[in-house]
Every structure is written in structure tokens, then in C-alpha cells.
Image 1 (cartoon, rainbow, N blue to C red):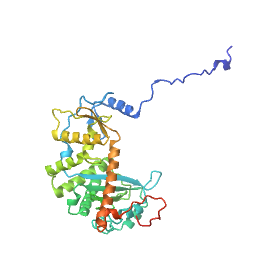
Image 2: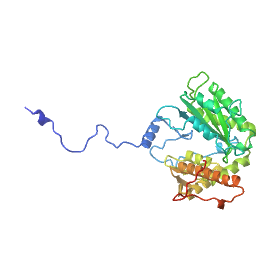
Image 3: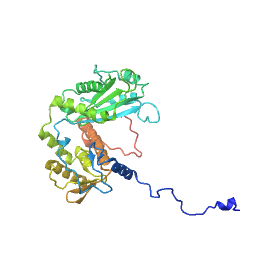
Image 4: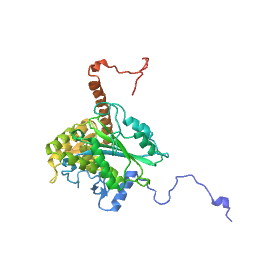
Length: 357
């Protein structure tokens, strides 16, 4: 008779996994595997489609010809950034709405450098404190930045914002409760638009991700194009030429990212359907990225772009905006003083500096 204790023995050794003993796949590998099972094409982050790679890089083979895209479109360009700010729960990380409104109204953001005033659908002197109070019990609100590329040429940014808000109401099928302020303290004048997170019945206002990411920008571009007309060809080319040497994230970088494979490789060798102007601009931009250490040449007209290039370029653009703002303060507000009259405080045992930020 077998002893029950003798029948159960623990022997040292490697742990055996049931089923497949292969190492777990990385997230990227899992995505590529799933994409191959779905069919002949997968959606790209840029909104288009690309053929699956079947475990191989698409670099050098079967690449799609690049042609004239929205880069050369005569439509006016508008940058729209939107975010949803929740008022409750662990996800809430933003400053209180009243504090954000005070920040938006700070001095130095208007055309004349004075303190800004909020406006709404009917008044140029909106009661932002009342707006913040109405938002207190809401689940969330929306913060939208709208920056037309040719904002300086437009007649009235406030009228443009009211037209855009009316178009949003028509698209969403509800009246909106909103306030806004126009800022002129950067090279690109822009509007900060704040919208309550409730519809005209008091229910939570839910806006589709597609409308926030693309639909709202398209509406804004339509309004700017109506006012300023189609963009002339020479202006389009000049703007793209300036982007080649820009130390920031540009539309050329977006085009490059959309054409690169999952490893950041892009093939710009001449093809039968390629647009020569776009190819020249993209090669020029990649040469600039190469000088910045963000791309490397891996063959004739073939490049590999760092996966962190976008974050680096966006950080550089933000730093550039800060430096330009400081320079403008020196040249406009200190017209009777030179840069040499200012001192850079590095801390240490110096006396404390008291002032207003």
C-alpha cells in the first residue's frame, strides 16, 4: 500500500508553464500580430491606413508613394487643442476653474498689454465668476485653444469665436454655456474657449472624440477660409520652407511620422508617383533632424527617425515660445533700457527679490 506522503514529492527544478512556454510578447508585437489577423490593412495614428508588415520592416519595399496632401491644401490652417477637465474623482488634477480663469485674464496677454476680459455669446464683458459658479456641480467642463495660423490678418477674433460656438451648437444639437478670452502674447494669437459640461437640458454634455480631434478643427478652418479666402500658393510654399529649419514640431514632421514604419524608418528614394516638391521639403527636414541628432541617414534618401523626436521637438517649441515672450518683454516694456541693464539672479546669498509674477 502506497503511503499518501510518499506519493506527493516536491522535486526542485524549473517551473513549467502550462500550454505555450514562449516568452510573453511585447505590446508592439501583440498589436502587430492582431493587425495581421484583421485583414489587409490597419489604421494608422495619422488617420490613414498602411499595409501590415508581417514581422518585417516595410522599409525599402512596397512603400506607398507620397503625393500632394493637406500640406499643399489651399484651406486655412487652424490648430485646435481640447481637453476635458473633470471636477471630481481621482482623475482631477487641474487647478480650480476660478484659478484658471484668473490666469487667463492676467496682464500682458492683450494687444495693448493690459489685463484681459472674458467674453461670451452676447457680451465683451462676460461674468466669469458667475460662469465658474454655474460649473461647480457639473461633472466636467471643456477647455479648448483655437489658434488660426493667420489670426493677425483676421478682422475680429471674438466674432470668429462666436461664429465657431454657434456652429458647434448646430453640430451638437444643443445650446452651449461658454466664456472665452483672446490672447496676443505669442507669435500666434489664439483664443481660450471654456464650455460647460452640460447641455441645454442639464444633462452631461458628451462630445465624440472624433469631433473634438478633427471636426472642430475643420469647422474653424472653414470659417477662416470664408473670411480670408483660399491660401495663395506662394504663401503655402513659403510657410513650408520655413518649417524645414524650424526647431519645433511641424506639419512636415507629421507627414514624416505618417510615412515612417513602426521603427521610425522612411524611404524617400524617387518613385513614379511621388511629388517632387514634397519630397524635397521632407528630405530637407530630415537633414535638419539629422543635425539635431533626431534622425540618421541609413542609405541614399533613406532615414531612421528617433521615436522620441516628437516629444523633443515639442519641448523645443515650448522653450522657444518662452524665450520669445521674455524677449518681447525686454524690447516692448523696457524700451528705455537695454538687455545689459537686467541681471540674471542665480540664488546664493543674495537678498530676496519681492515682486509679482
